[in-house]
Amino acid sequence: MFNGEKYVLIKTDDSTLQAKSKTENKNPLCVEKCATCMVIMLGGAGANGGSVSVAVNKMAEYLKSNGY
Image (cartoon, rainbow, N blue to C red; front, side):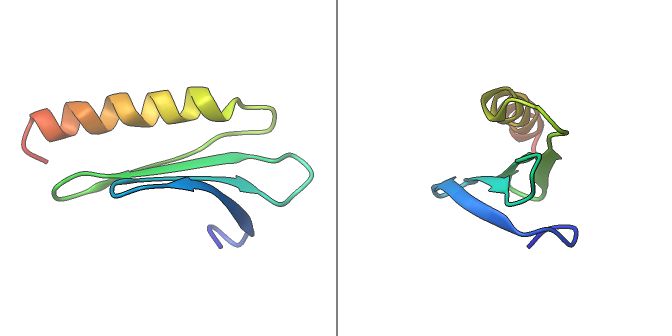
């Protein structure tokens, strides 16, 4: 559950979680943990899960390189 919606877990590893909502829109969700924070992105209706994952990864890498 995230933000009151149910999600299906697609992929997970040590620092990344990818899921898709069970609603009609199938909104993608991606979470990546850094040392002191987490980057969470919820795609809108029709969003591509791969694009959401790439965006979250870029932000997480930037934060990690700056000590977060």
